[in-house]
Image 1 (cartoon, rainbow, N blue to C red):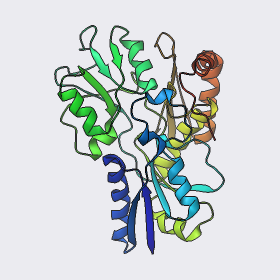
Image 2: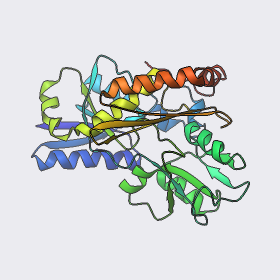
Image 3: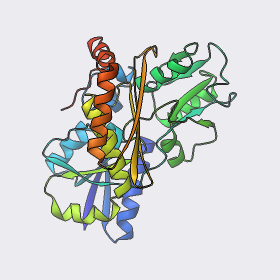
Image 4: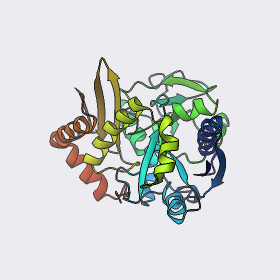
Length: 310
């Protein structure tokens, strides 16, 4: 079968597209990768949480799917809105990488070891809020660009440390400055972090069947749980919400967090269950009732982040 894969043009996105292509070529499929520039790629001078574009890393790729110029789209799952248009479906969730965040630094081995007033680079409101909850004395500065650009800024001394997803660093073989894989109990990852989603046109049975061998059931159920929580809380990919689910002895263990942007309010919740969506919704409900609704109303009301579900 001949398949055209749509991908963003960043180094990490192309790694993801080539990773998918390699799996397909092993099964004798012909594969072409088409680079598509998204809104999120074009806006590089604004903190992501202030951009306010829904599906900012996916819309143009989905437009290409609709137009038929590509057959398959590969996304970082955390960039994919929790409610897909009825025109699309997720045909596969690939086996997941480590979902946790990583602290990168030339000089300091951990968050705890950072000196007072240290400059930390991140453009993630989720990371910033949780970091400030444990170290309110640190100074957080915006950090955009691809992985190489961010690491180059760290190496040039613009920051004392930066926080990136461990999965992206491992996929690109850029772990030389990783000093700490941050525990989920300290920094809860984004829903779907570390997972790749393969999106196709709804009802395209031939392509779905072709991709079925890539669907990793444990990764799909874990991320389904996390995304159910995110959906319950009404959040996009740039809100201060963390969710991390993992199978333990036949049950899913979900850990979640909601934080105010300044880190002064931080709610954590965890629970066990066997129904991914039900567990995510239940933990989301609990967080809302414990004060999460007030925190998120404040976030949305201040326009700190405006990506809404489509």
